[in-house]
Structure formats: C-alpha cells, structure tokens
Length: 410
Ligand code: SF4
Image 1 (cartoon, helix red, strand yellow):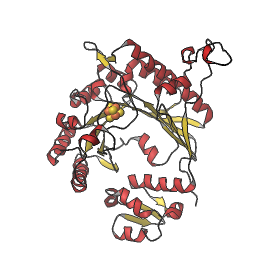
Image 2 (cartoon, rainbow, N blue to C red):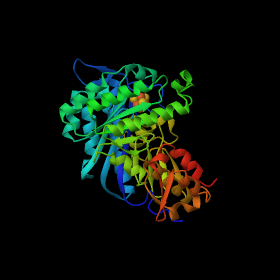
Image 3 (cartoon, rainbow, N blue to C red):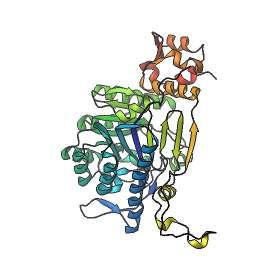
Image 4 (cartoon, protein in one colour):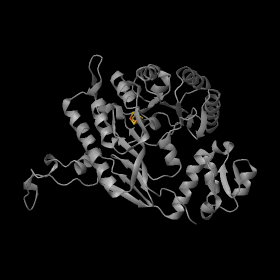
C-alpha cells in the first residue's frame, strides 16, 4: 500500500492554540487557563490584575519563537491558512493579537485565510475594527442563541450573540462563522428551530453545528449523565442539516455548512490530510509520518521558548553556579512524539475522507479494509464505489463513524 500524500509535502497550514479563557465551560475538556477579566467602561476586556498580563505577553513572544524554530526545522512554503483557536484568542486583546499576526505576516500568501476564534463577549468594538482591518475570518462560539441552553452547557452568562455578529458586520468583517451545538440536555426541536430562525436573520457565511460530546470527568457529565437518546440526537441532527440546507448552506462536512465559496479552508486542509504545524501548549502538529503534541502547560511552554533570567534556577540550586543574567537559548517545548505507520495513515485518510464524502482510491486503503465490508455498505447506500474509488454517501455521512468501524479490518 502507498498512502500517497497523507500529511506529506511542504507545510502550508498553521494552527496556534491560545490557552486562555475568561471562565471554564462545564462541557469543555480543552486545555486552557482562566484569566479573570475586568472591563473598563466601554473598553476592551483586560486581565483583572496587572500581573496577569505578563503571562499573556510572554505567551505571545513564546509562540513567535516557536514559529521561528519550526520554520527553520520544516519546509514551509507560504502559509495559506492560519488559525488562532483556543481557548479564547480574542482575550489577548487587540495589541497582542496584532503582535501575533505580525509574527506570521511575512509568510502569509496573498489570499491567505486567517481565522480567530472568539466568544461574543470578547467581540467588542476594538476587536471588530481590528478584525476588519486585517480581513480576519471570525469563528464565533455561540453554542445556542437561547440563554437557557447556554446555561445548561455551563457557559458564563454572555452578551447577546446576535449583537456580536451585527457588530462584526458593521465594522466590516467579511467572513463570519458561528458555532452551535445540538444534543444539549433538555434541548427540543423547537429550540433548534429557534436557532435556525436566528441564523436566517443573521446570515453568517459559515456554520459549524456540532453534536454535544459529553466527556467523562467534565462538570457537565457529572450534572447530566443522561443526554438525549441516540434517536433524539439523530432526529435533531437531521433537523439541523435540513434546516441549514433550506437556508442555502452547503453541508460539506459532518458538522460544517457553508455558503458558496465560504468553506473553512483551514479545516478542509485537515480533512484532506495536508501537513500542518500546531503551535502553543496542547497544539498538535502532523508532518509526514510524525505527529507531536506540545505539552499542555503554559508555564512549561513559555519557560522553554522565552527563557528569561527569572525562569532560571538560582545559582544555589546548581552544583556548578552559573550567571543568571545570561539566558538560555530558546528550545522547543516539552512534547509527545508519535510515528505514524502506513496503516495508521491509511486509516486516518479514510476517516477524514468519510467526514466530507470525498473519494479515496480503493487501492490506497485496501490493506486496512475488511474485504467483506464494502459490498454490503454499497448495497445499503452508505458507500459508493466508482472507477476504483470509494466514497461515503450523503446517507452514510449521518453515520460516518459506524461506516468506518464496519469498513476497517479488525
Ligand atoms: S470558552 Fe471555549 S475553550 Fe474556553 S472553556 Fe469554554 S468551550 Fe472551552
């Protein structure tokens, strides 16, 4: 088997994980640190204690340094997509976001897609003006337009998300994506209809509508061990797909819907198994047959990449004393590294293609397939086979994980 170009070739896609949030949400298991905020009258949110700003500033420096180290270590051919995710990147404030942006600016291609995630509360006037000036695509974490659904998810009470979308548009932001969730405990078909009606009014360019994943160990899992049943969640999912298609969005991935020309190019690169670099604590990179994850610890991350003298142990701690005023050289942060064998690459390629309904040459994935699985899936209308290429059908995309489980050789 030759898994062809899975994660091979020059790097053109970069993700930056900004691990700071104003509060933890009950369903979330992403790595982030809480930065308590205060908001001056009419002004941008800022860390409540001045001392809390220092880690944010040093984080920005550390990401810039990691980017320089990775650029030197890999073949990077112009950055076509750059994604600031989190966490809540907008919490950095406009000044730090601009510094981060500038760290990459010289390597961005002419029509690069740059995305910044934010919550409605952080999408204030200053942020909106900056995003418009930099022609940044915004991914807005709404989850539901109904306050009681956001409360069920354990999100902090937020400003009206619709007002945030209007503010971004009024400032001139051209490309807005909204994140929503279905399968929230207590959510009904009427609640989903309400969110669809708000979308019809706001007309964002892109919608990511995920099914709630209740992760064991999260506060939500302890509060609501019973989420809607499989049948209830499947019905809500069908309602979401049909509703968004009626509004003119194209269903191009399991959870993603776009107006023409507005697909999330960064995510499409993941689903096409393109190589990418992930910077920041907890970020994952996959290049060629190697995958690594920076340790999810902002203090360790900053200490490795921005080793100012105050991170050095005191001379008394060292067997041979050293001068604490001479800083160490920056080094990559602590990481877990994994080698991806051909079978793993082939499986991932098939699973990623299944998400978008894209075709995969049967010859590329045959060694990981159960030889008896293809024909029954084709007969059931969940898979198509044409010209030696298999493709998960629209019907199969609703149950894509199950299709993959049945396809793979045990
Ligand atoms: S704001 Fe986003 S990243 Fe932060 S805790 Fe909530 S869901 Fe997680």
